Length: 233
Image 1 (cartoon, rainbow, N blue to C red):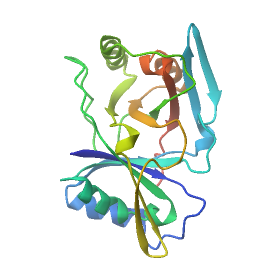
Image 2: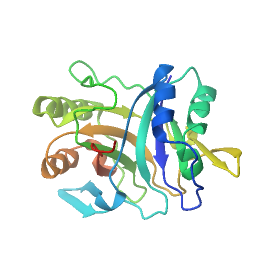
Image 3: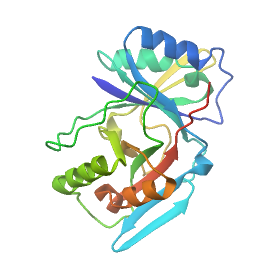
Image 4: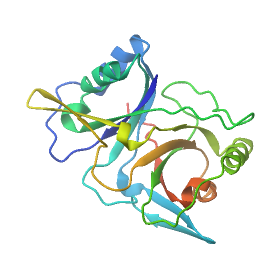
């Protein structure tokens, strides 16, 4: 079973006593961690929404919250218990908070597969974080339209892969405070907007924005465009 771990900040977090590098080495060595990358600060986010014939691009995240996603990790665990063990041992479980989301496989047909990449070196420059928007007009994306968007992105080099996530009701939040492990149901932050999927997007800022603006899910939600850190060693 695949799980995405959203590594989030938390103003109430405590100093971590271990480096992320040791955590990465441990779970890579066990064959559990598949990949992961840190993201540049949330202040550098651009949010893309499509409403009718308009494309709305704003600076900053879709929702103003004290907690924000600082990176992600993809793990292949036997079950949720093992995914919790992985998340609980992450330094950001102490310094921040970690949301565990099961991946929901979606088959969009031939020619829509992810582009293989080498673990922590994805070829994409950006992570697109797809979010729900309860204030958006009702819209149900057509799977055929989503498949066409993916194929167009693969042909142009804009789209390099993605993961569709199970609903937020299946999310598990992991934190460690005062040495005590806290495990609760729910997302990394309270709010009516939640992450429904992630996509890896390459190109310039403008090319990435233009591509996400054509995403069918941007009509019923919003797409946050976040740039990966590359020189973080």
